[in-house]
Image (cartoon, rainbow, N blue to C red; front, side, top):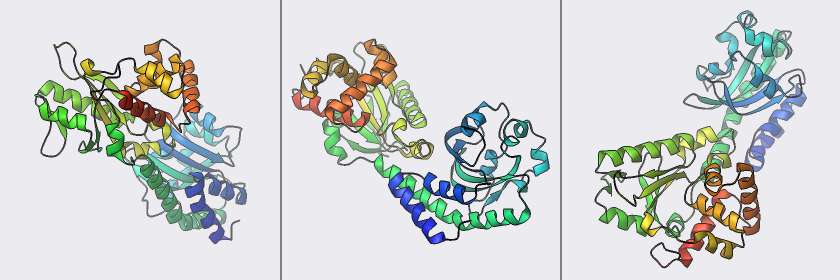
Length: 384
């Protein structure tokens, strides 16, 4: 039983800031209450799709895998959308324990886990159908006195756990914001701009400014949003931007016009890829990620870029070809297909290139590559 609440809260906020998660505190709770199964879950509650999870005091070697193998839907997570965030949610307020025991999910998962037939939880964050929560899963044999003790403990912890999770989200949001975006954009050898989630332009480089001023079709409207006079191009823009926002993954290349040779094409790339954000935070962070939009004119596309990258960064030809494709907006899988290698080999090439250049991430090496291509170009986006 935990009696030193001050130390627990100190560890809670230290874990959020230093370790990037809450599992350290939850493991302490699990040790203090060894008969109480505790879980942390971030998921789409209606689809029962887990983004991240941690289980403590559950039976079996891997409760998450056992849960994934169940054929029946877990009745508890959807209740997270009905519970008030200002109090601890109790499942028996919505579904009676005896009714839980009649479900197939009880036989498939809850009964083998100590005959769990009810739970109480703290909603850490809620956004659309996605929710993150901490739950105490109560065995059928737990008495009223023990249950009341757990409820009071959760009521004490609720605002602090919610505060710590909000802190985690804010730190993650700041990590996806750019430092010195104007300088970084000017290193990209193409028209480029950064868009807020609602479509408004935050920053644009000189090439984009020139393009939008002289283009017959693309322009910036009075709400400072990128749009087009032609309905087809406008639809293409809206589709690719909404796709990149929804998936938090690169979208493109997409041709902007029809029926012309040397069509310009567009990429929309989240400033930080979804797979670079903690999986438990990604569903809540992705909608607020700014997008990098690049527009390439084939007549002005960099030439022999992979050779220049190989020389400048000390990469092999294959590694430089891969980085070149990533710079142009391809996902790692797409880049692998375009240069004719397997996804596994592409991952190895990327890891090798990242190590050689001292880069911290895929986004970092892409920024370095674009800077080099800009510096060795002739001022018009050409590198050869």
